[in-house]
Amino acid sequence: MKPNKQIKNWWIDALMLVGYLFCFYLEFTGVAGHEWLGVGIGLLAIFHTWLHWDWVVAVTRRFFSGTGARSRLYYLVDILIVIGFVVILETGLAISTWLNLDIMNYVAWLDIHIYASYATLALLVLKVGIHWRWVVNLTGKIFASEKKPVAVRGFGSISVPVQVNPEAVDRRRFLGLMGVVGLGSLLAVINVVRENSIYNASADGNASAMGIANNPATSTSQFSNAQPATQTTPAAAADTAVDATASVEPDMTALPTAEPTNEPAQETQAAVADCQVRCSKSCAFPGRCRRYVDQNGNGLCDLGECI
Image (cartoon, rainbow, N blue to C red; front, side, top):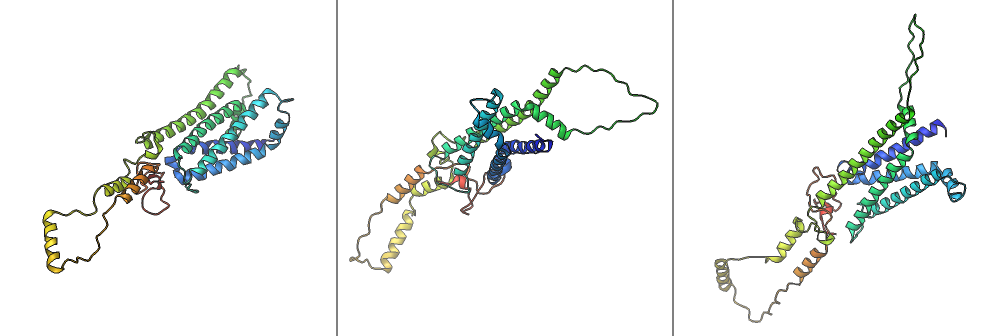
């Protein structure tokens, strides 16, 4: 492979890995940034596959005959990574604010999206591990500073033999690379786990009841259904009755009014019980919450409203 092509592949892979790690920091990117970043990583993955398409076709044709164990391992890891990206993109689009689909099992789709992201991240770390020599060598060539020889008058060059243990050097380089990649991946996973524990703290495991108790909108509707529309004191009722009899004579021919029923209140309570709330915070202003989105323009976060 030509040096320029190797450098281009290195930059594409580095952008994919760094961008993928940033997707785990939703409070930094926000919902819109998370969605656009995911689409960008998907496009980079397609471009990466197109650059290596000849290798993919060659290994696919002779996978069971004439292909070494190393090439088969690379092929299987790449196939699993592609499957992981497909699952992430499909579930991400299903729960995205772009399509705004009415998904009844939103929590299940979100869990698949998150766990597929974990598995794909582990596969990416494995891919870096099996290609660590190429990564380290090319990184050294890209960022190594050129050292110019210094001429000193009156002194000749003296060669001093230095014993270098190649195994120790390779071990240090491998541990250094995997330490950086592994630490970055671990911090990204911990951040997602921390976010989920914060936003699901009020959930009781039932998706349809998540956040309803702490949602001001639903609690207000329940309170309005439980309480009568108007309340009058006995004194006020007596004054009203006296004024009514003094000013207007009773109409004996008037039709009797229908007795109020509780059907609308029961329907509203049933709708509240069946709704899903994806976030129990019910933010009225984005503030420091990067998940805030208000597409219906009612001043409340859409994630805290019933769907």
